[in-house]
Length: 161
Length: 177
Image 1: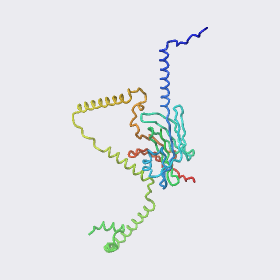
Image 2: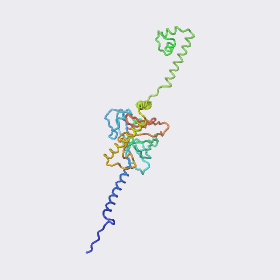
Image 3: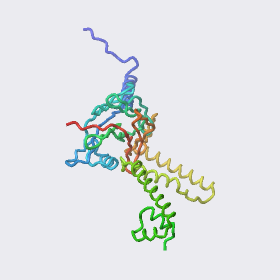
Image 4: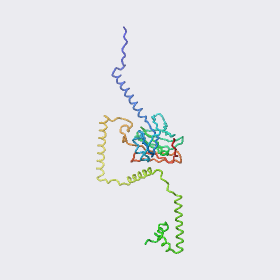
């Protein structure tokens, strides 16, 4: 009875094991590097008022609610809209739509020692309101004081998560 | 007794009591009285003009204004504060500074080795030692309004740890039902 010859690695088992370990390490490195090239950017449209009723401050704003209320002079915060996007290094421009016709464009990104350098353009109904360059550390939102709305104020927040 | 100038300016401003005003006017001869009346009329006209044409503009954002003002005062006070006096020779200070730096570096390295096993090699220094990780940091480097009617002010409250790009001149939006 013919028996098939047993296959053996050309350089022996120790070399093959080393190659497998190296391949796994390289894969882990690449995955980690890919994750470092991506950030999640969150934007939200906040409605700040001094009206009565229950405070419906959303969880995402809870760490900054006290400061927002004090600086803007309102005691109720409500999230009218929000959007999250993964910013990929290979994509040049992102548009985030927090709501009420506002569009926040992020069209370049560099990572610095203290955070992300973002070029932001805020517009509403195709009308450019402001362009700005900002450096944002993770979980350090930047706030745009928007127009008066209803009985309060609109605030647009952008944050790198 | 009040000096004449003081009484005269009080009379011009209408701050004298009726008795004082009558006594002041009785002390003037007809020519002086005519000149004083003319000046009082001119002063009143100027006051009316200023009141009607140069009203004090309402401060739209008093909290923001106060914050900015206090921040600026604090910054100017910090800048104006005298530097602490130094003593000892410059060589001794250099020696102690070098020794302190070396000690801090050794402690930091030891802490990194203990907590992470070994220092990692990376091109991103931020990944190894985040500067004040968890601290708020948002800085507006530059801003430009998109419309001539809009003003944009970068505002950072160090006490509240909040950075705002403050836009003025935006149209009011009525709330949707």
